[in-house]
Length: 339
Image 1: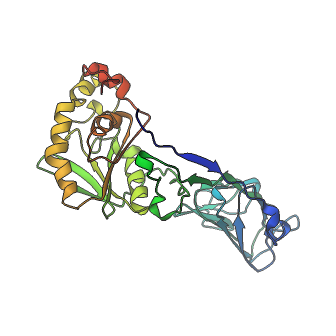
Image 2: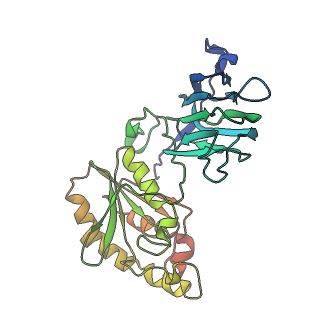
Image 3: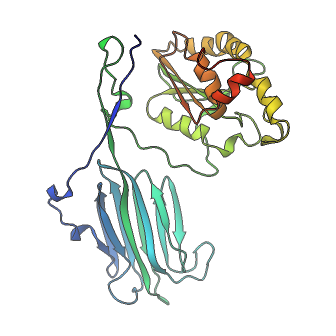
């Protein structure tokens, strides 16, 4: 019989009533002049944020609230139901009062009637500034924990081995990255040979080979997805990540789906070529770093190499997301069950 790994994900629901700080103390109403507060947001929490107590906010006000994500929360939402902040620069909010929200490493100013609605997998900072001139009716907003933390329990696998608490998170899944448009990658492009490039990020002996989707690594629309952002996320959590260009520059014609897609897809979904690149180019590169483990991950088209590569003893684990191999294998003359 074949052994199987078992992984249980248990939702953690912690009673907020055990905290000594009352809910009222975490609701924020900005006062005159300067206000500065720090609020920890846990699972089940919803806190209000108001720019003033009366009908209109006062001049020369600076109100700063740092919302810290608690251990039982993995995603927060800051959203306003009422929003009227005076400013003569409707586009960039540079001429008058403003509410600035900082999340996911970026800051954005809001004014006039443009209501903030910001989701983050980390802390959120909210700053309200008013000048000494004309004032408005202000803002009424809420900060809410929208996703509770989950815990991975240690269970038995092959040979009685236990599922490791890897990545330094003591068995708790790290928060997933929030998808960003125009994301700036943190790694580097390298040459594996004269025609095969790769994206590399991270360091260490725990290695992950990420197989890209149908848009490839160097195609004209390859950076519109999330591949490099997810590779950076894994690197930040202790992994050495490589995304090889399986297409060797022979990318999706026109950069998108069209009449030539089927024939092109059949030509690049060639296990003989992929195995040769793995054996002669990619694996030797990995072995130069003395890997303690090698995992493979694939999205969309990338599941095709992952399913094949997972048969090798050098691969510790294989993961496919939104897999396309069930459709690609018959085209390549393969049987999924046999593979």
